[in-house]
Length: 110
Image 1 (tube, rainbow, N blue to C red):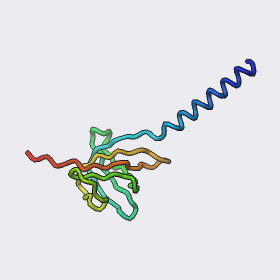
Image 2 (tube, one colour):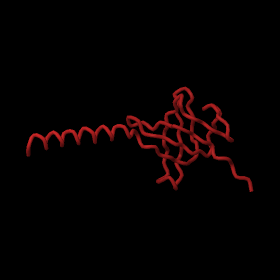
Image 3 (cartoon, rainbow, N blue to C red):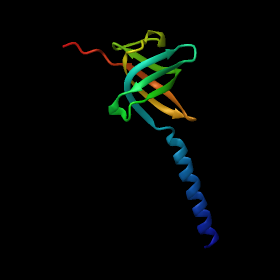
Image 4 (spheres, one colour):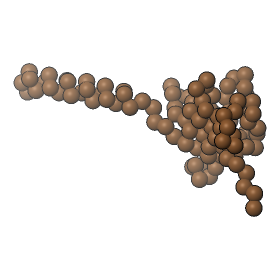
């Protein structure tokens, strides 16, 4: 293989890795029931619904940029209560689930 082909291969690999790094973490969503809230540690635990995969408890970090919505209004972490049905949009950052948004699902009245 000539020098030009080697350099083109190296450049292609470099640009491919650079593009992959720009994509960033993958955003995922889980629906379930809020199990616990730890305002001091800024975490919540959600029991995932069976529709979101196997039923399991998932822990999420809550940062200053996490949007928390209840009844269409932005609320504080302290306004959430165990038992609330929630939808959490998150991404995995360095092996930790970080909540981007937490929405409380309104109770159905029929």
